[in-house]
Length: 154
Image (cartoon, rainbow, N blue to C red; front, side, top):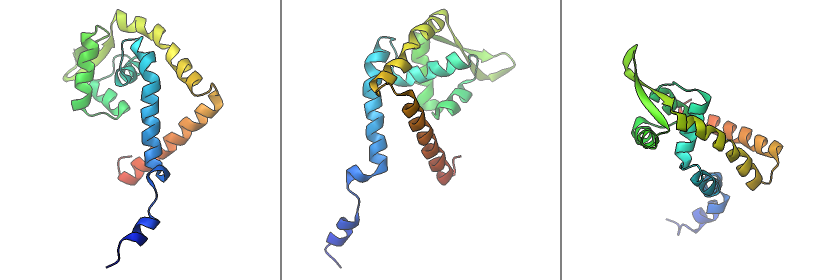
């Protein structure tokens, strides 16, 4: 048996791992979003749920979970908090009682106007270069899609 020194020399350092760079970037994004979203009274996951509803009101909880890649155990408490804040309402689908549909309230609709400032504020935090931000977004989508395909989840 060796002393393990050769194995350690061949391993990438933490800072050299792509997964760690993505992990750190995620934390940095959350830190940048926090004060902006605090003005809206939303957490980052709540903001994402509101974005989905601002795009497509009336979708099912299941459809939202698929869109956000969240399971119902994570999504349901988030939606209950948004409902408690008076931003959304959950209603059983009259044609299929098993399905719950999500709708904006007047307050949730009003928040859409205030929420329009968020992308601009984040763009400014990234240096204001929209073309570079779009290029990065596309690259991250490719990474996501490749990882989902490799894991059989695509």
